[in-house]
Length: 332
Image: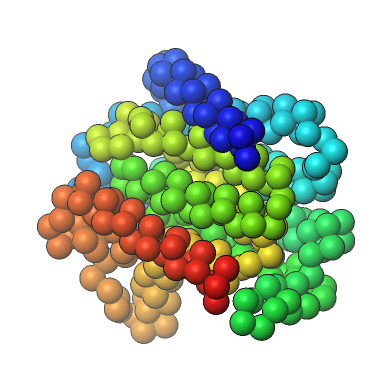
């Protein structure tokens, strides 16, 4: 356990040191938020979001890129130190999800920088996300032998080859849930830290040392990012961060074998994504909005809550969900 905490501390300090020159670098290459006329999936203006976010123009984004670099480097180093304890395919699915979805997010960010405000079309992103997710699901099934769900009250439920589709669904869902949640300073990073602490407890329970070390490294780097992301943020994750972290969060959950607990631990992300989904479906099939505005964090801003108040109460709710998720995983 000492080395798990040691890697978390090492990752934290390395990331803290590197983020300052990295932010300066993003300014130099103009990797900054520009004035946008944001549109939703139906190509309609989201005027409230534009008005609320106007003061954030000029803030650099792409912090997820440094998180990926630090975590990948330290993980490979840890793999060299503790190779006996590491399944090669476990390392592959973690880094493939991290780097693959990170590359997709980086391309999306780049398209926004060069003037295409909303980046890739959602349906194009969704297709690529599913391709990447199915590759990961296939490796989990064929190479690591995952074909089951564990529910405490029932035990292991074998899904057979259908597990590949299930894993793909979990990954794509978490990628978009984390991406949707990244709208307020500190919101996503704080929720990720809470979720990762809970996952660290799950990994320790199944005695997966390498997974615990990976989570610790990720936890340290995301914590360093949060220092620069709290209100008013000096840096944002960008899609490179939200997509990569959403994917790896889902993969960590799949590797623990407890998807129900994972859904509960990430409850705030589920609420954020669910509110957007309800809004999308109501527009599509009913021709009207069921909610005043979505996702959920924008609803509270529209009610007049200040941004830090929304974020801190979301963190509190995330902590409640994390405790409940651990209860589901361990006690049931």
